[in-house]
Amino acid sequence: MSDNFQVNKQFARFEGKDVLIGLKNWEEVEGKIITIDNFLNLVLDDGEGLKVIKGGKIAFISIQE
Image (tube, rainbow, N blue to C red; front, side):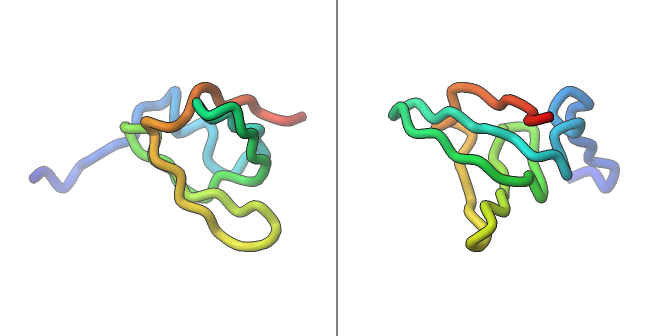
């Protein structure tokens, strides 16, 4: 494994942002992305605690302004 792993810039721009995440099962989750990887696996702070969401379950991510 390489020590210089970097997250894709398109995905990294979501870190620290308030987002709306649409899941493939039609649920929606809102919160702030704590961290994200190249597979779109992420840790989300939804105000009640931290949630781990697997990238394969995500349909879309929308930044809330």
